[in-house]
Amino acid sequence: MDLQEFTQSNAPVAGGEGFQKENNRLLDVPLDGTVMVKAGSMVAYTGEVTFTGKSSAEGGITGFVKEAVSGEGTPVMQAEGSGHLYVAENGKKVQVLELDADEAISVNGDDVLAFESSIDYEINTVNSLSGMAAGGLTNVYLSGPGELALTTHGDPLVMTPPVCTDPDATVAWSANLSPEFEMNKTFEIGQTSGESIQVKFTGSEGFVVVQPNEEGSVTQSQNQ
Image (cartoon, rainbow, N blue to C red):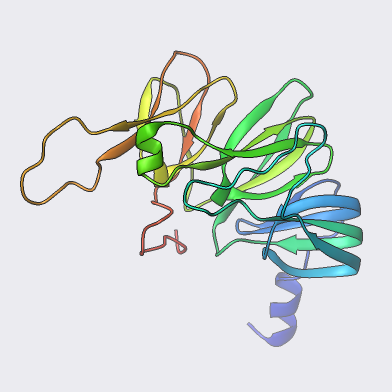
């Protein structure tokens, strides 16, 4: 394709309200006020936008940051102004969800990309003894109303509990679920399976979102 064709075919899509996916891996946030986005996720913006780090992130009345057991929190920043803000995260696919006023979801801190300022949020860790041994799982509890965007390596799979998942492949779960870390009870001799710790979701209601890639894996599935 020639240069003009290239610029026209890859130009931002005009119009629309709310979070818009420019493509599978890039989110356009029409900004007229404030929005919360993952720190370091900005790739471009138009208009006048300022960024403020939220080391002690406030999220409405209940917003509070707890450092993960590993000593790492979920860094977020507030973007304020007017224009268009473009955010992305390491080539991961973008999933846009809308929460009603009575809906909430917990998302792995690594997979939160952006959410509207109308959403209340709390950052904490999944508590359990074996979870602490694994370094914990930092999650963001998000309650509506408002739009949010999360990211996945490849296309997500949504499952119904009871189910056990790999902590590094666990993206999100419905707010009514209380996951627990569980150690593999099978005694392994010699070469280990690498699956010694799982996240256990019980019950028969709700959902769990997993991705076809382990977040901590050296090999990233950015080309999926």
